Every structure is written in C-alpha cells, then in structure tokens.
Amino acid sequence: MTGKGNWTWLIRGRVTTLIDAGTGEPGHLDALDRALDGETLVQVLVTHSHTDHASGASALLARMPHVQFKKLPWPERDARWPAPWTAIGDGDRIEVGDTSLVAIHTPGHAPDHLCFWHEETGTVFGGDLAVLGTTVWIPVSLQGDLTAYLRSLERILALNPRRMLPAHGAIIDEPVALLREYIQHRQEREQQVIDALRRGDTTPEAIVQRVYKNLNETMQKLAAESVLAHLVKLEHEARARRDGDAWHIIDP
Ligand SMILES: [Zn+2]
Image (cartoon, rainbow, N blue to C red; front, side, top):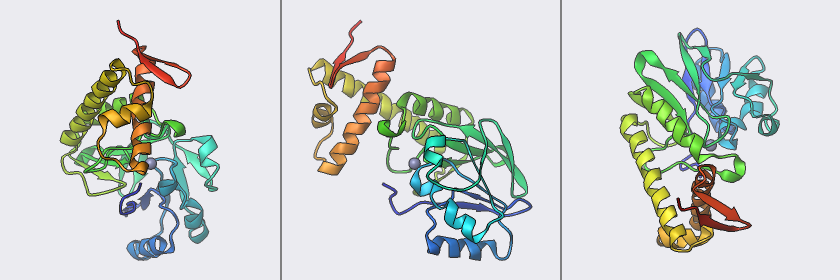
C-alpha cells in the first residue's frame, strides 16, 4: 500500500521541523541524524494517524526526548502511538524552519488528515491527499469518506498550489492538473457505479466485476472498498439506499 515507502520532509532553520514521523525504522532515524547535521529537531508535524505516518513517533521520542509532536487529534487512533501529542487544527499557522506553514484540514483519506501550506512558494505538503500515478485509498472501514475527500481536493485546488510534496511517490510538479484529474476520475467512477446499480448489481463485489477488469484477489478487495466509498457517498446524497447487504439506486 505504501509503494516504495514513504517520505518524511525535513525543514531546517530556527524551528527545525520534520513532516511525518515515519515508522521508526533505524535506517530512517540514522538518515534523519545525518540530515540534521548537529541541529536539534524541534517538532514533528504529522499529516494523519495511519501507521506509515505516525507510528515512528515513539522511536523518535526515544532518540530525541525534547521533540514536540503535533497533529489534528483522532483520539481512538492516536492512542496507538504513545507520544505527547499537541493538538493542531484547521487554519493554525505553525512556525516551521525560518518561515511558517498553515495547517489545512483535508479529511477523506483519514478523518484527521492535514495538509501544510506554504503560501510564499505555493508549496503544499500533501500527506496522502494525492499520489502521482495512482489514486488514493478511501478506507470506509477506517472512517474514510469520499464526500469529504472530494471537498478536500477542491479546497487544495482553490489555493492554486505550484508544487505538492507528497508522502508517497514523486514530487507533484503540476498539482492543479492532478487534482482536477482526480476529481474527474471520481466523477466517472461514480457514474459507472450508478450504471451498475441500474443494471441490477447490488453489492460492491458485483459492481467491481462489472466496472474493473482483470484484477487479482487483493486488488478486487481494494476495489470493492473503493466502490463502497462511492455507494456511501450516494447514500448520503439520497441517491442510493441499502437493504441489509444489497444496494439499490434511488431514481428521481
Ligand atoms: Zn494514509
């Protein structure tokens, strides 16, 4: 799920800051030491509480007990990663390096997801909002929410960012184009889900069989969760309803 792993971003300066905690792998901590080159890490801003972004907090804390850890709270989930978390939230301006970043609440992939925005350079630290070359997983079972995700895409799009530094994959040099593609892709997928319901498919699995071609078993499960995210969105909009495990279209 994490591709080749995940990035953490180090911003050196007056308030040396790491964006995302990683997983506490010794190799990452050693690389961080080298990158710090004798400077003191002041704080870690965590984009969201998924394992690959937050689980490294305790290992970091063990090496650097003075570091502050900041994220938007998701109490049930944050309890897994024992560290003294300081709450930050939407619109907070946070001193970082020799400048400041603004936290932007961008739920959807996870309820606590934050992007960090640097207006002067048009740079957004995107966390898991977007990954070049693929789409982002919306895990309904982990409070993923497609409606919220689409709103978050629109919100970042409205900032007209020039560059996105993601947590996975290559740097995104044309974030506006990518975010527009993402929105369009979800609109197309939604129409496919609606068409499948109209043809009488009633489960995410059946819809996957119709809409996606040639998926292996693991990918089918992920695709079913993605279809479920669409169904839940349609349900919120009173365009679909569920009877037990069976989904139906509500035609106007
Ligand atoms: Zn994630």
